[in-house]
Image (cartoon, rainbow, N blue to C red):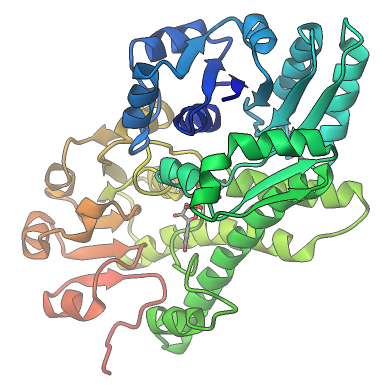
Length: 440
Ligand code: UDX
């Protein structure tokens, strides 16, 4: 059993802390936000993440998971310290590493014996080297430490599952002692035959950015093929299914939609481009993926405009789904923000509903109307737009939906509904790349 301190109880820190305690270690999750720690002590989870409350409760009950606002004590009491603070996008697209470096100073001041310092926050290649320098130049005692980069690959909405059953665990470190300790942390995964791979520090840092940027690239690619399919009369669902059957491509992340959002892809793609620029390289593929994503978000509004025959002004549009993906309350970089803002600019009215994210979106658009169910949002609207593929939007009663609308106009940006069925029910509709008069 290892004594673990997690600094930063955001989404990554909390899921990782709860997951590592579930592996049998003693974990203290620490944060400078005393309020957050107090509510966690009361069993309140600050984020919506399926399965997280159960995981936290189970490990708190077993005394393996504790919360603290004493960063210094947490560092002193731990064998391994995970840095899991936020790395937001800075004003120029570069990553803001100030929180990470602050924690590094704090670690240095409280380093009283050999410890492992491990970064989970997403940080650009080269950050590990800087963290080591900061600790070395600020430490008060002549003690050693090892540095590890252990990037996370957690998807919001399925983060607990991703943590407990990862595809792989990447351990970037240059010391066998540290690698052995990290293997012990993740020991239970060996039983599930999950690979735990050692790399050097900068390679581990690169794996994270390269993975996220590749997935973003894949989405932008399929979105562009979907847009082309619309024009050429092909059906993207069939195209994506068939290209995905090629084992080299795989069917995952080949779902066209309104453009990717969230806290990672938009930020990490930009950061990779910046990183390349600093190295005097122009990373053309990722730059193109970013541009394609900006256009895809705009394109959803153009589709709406054309469904409404160019007259958005004075029209009421029901938006179903506000979060950037289902099973999360996170609206960061959500395509819903773009479409709502375009509708408002064009003089339309928005009636919004999301099963979880109404409250988050209210902070950005306090003046639009939010509803407690889809029926109320849709009533008397001129058009309905499905922006997030929440399960409850996958099985809407389409006959009831049509009756509630002033005019039967539907924009399905997640390709949930069968175009044939929509045609039969008399909807005028649009999708992302689906053929409208399907006949096969
Ligand atoms: C992502 C990575 O998947 C995860 O490994 C990393 O650690 C953090 O970033 P997340 O942002 O939570 O996770 O969500 P993800 O499921 O990857 O989706 C990101 C965006 O892409 C969403 O807006 C989603 O709707 C969109 N998407 C995803 C598509 O448009 N099409 C797809 O086929 C897949």
